[in-house]
Amino acid sequence: MMTLPRPVDLRIDARWIVPVVPSGVLEGHALVVDAGRIVAVLPAADADAAYAPRHTLTLPSHLLIPGLINAHAHAAMSLLRGIADDVALEPWLHEHIWPRENRFVSPEFVHDGTLLACAEMVRGGITTCSDMYFFPEAAAAAYDATGLRAVLGVPILDFPTRYAADAEGYLSQGLAARDAWRHAPLLSFALAPHAPYTVCDASFTRILTYARQLDLPLETHLAETRDEVDRARGNTGVTPLARLDRLGVTGPDFIAIHCVHLDAPDIALMARHGCHAVHCPASNMKLASGIAPVAALVAAGVNVALGTDGAASNNRLDILAEMRLASLLAKVATGDAATLPAAAVLAMATINGARALGLDRVTGSLEPGKDADVVAVDLSSLAVQPVFDPVSHLVHVADRTCISDVWVRGARIMADGALTTIDESAVRARTRAWSQRLAATP
Ligand SMILES: [Zn+2]
Image 1: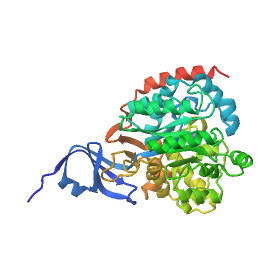
Image 2: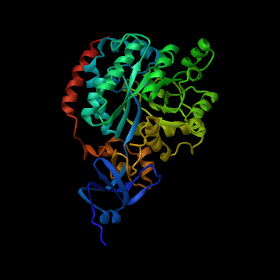
Image 3: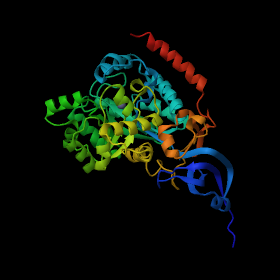
Image 4: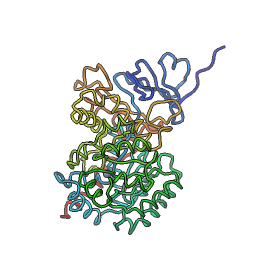
């Protein structure tokens, strides 16, 4: 008996498909998508018999990968890109960033800056961004309009900003934003106390209570500089991570961003509690914060994801670039060229990011049942030839100009090099207007 081919929305045949899970490179395969979900990744001949796609796309020189996950950004800070280079973290925050934020940050600033970041991230193959910034409801509108998946970290500090007056104010505003956007299928929320040095024990405890009650991830900048750790030891007698552990923060819903200056007991603690680390190599290098012990974290079994941090300390939101830096930096830091091979950093930029954000049932790999968050990378340019191993090329050779197509939940938000959901000239005009106001401020 013959079975009729099943009607589906889309079939993509690509030169190579790297699903990440399972590992390895597939050739002569097709990816089948229906109703926004991946239905199958299978040999092309089998796809002919099994599926009747309404649309087909043949990409003869392309690599298909899962959408990249930027596990840490401050998207709206793209409007501050390049405003203060060559400065260490503390003066960078106190003299350059916080004064400008105190003057300018508003729902309009956040919306326009996030849209600028979305345009850059989509062109860079990023399909999920974990964002931490003021007015998350304004960022949510930009992600929703773009069709990007986002985790919005509700920022919490113990001091006042233009967004809120105190920890309670940040929490209540952030939870109201979560409530307002609860029906958006691509958006979710996290609680984001800024850092151990800006949030007191009582606030951390309160945030933890909310996080547990509402089943939200809790993320914070942690051990970013040597100075932060030394001061914490002076004030509390323990490392910042050990302090958070005493408060009960550590666990599988805890995401520690940066983790540059963790000691061996900290790393063991991260592993024991199933905490996640987000490695931001470019930001750590640019602010001269140091080199995170990524090889040791991985060896201990800690899940390590990749982030860009904000464009004010990077100065780009480019996960492909972070992948290459992560690999090179780990090799030079350990003196071992075998450290962090290309496949491992691709996993960090995809499935590990999804695990950290609690989204691994939805995205992070090209597996049937997951949402179709997919990126096509054109490896035909002479600058990328010849191709012996497409995963090696993705990490060490390709750049954002190779990315041709991006789908999120099956929606093609970049098609053959063109953004389909963002009016780039409008974003350019808004960005120019903000840059003139920002430049006029000392
Ligand atoms: Zn950050």
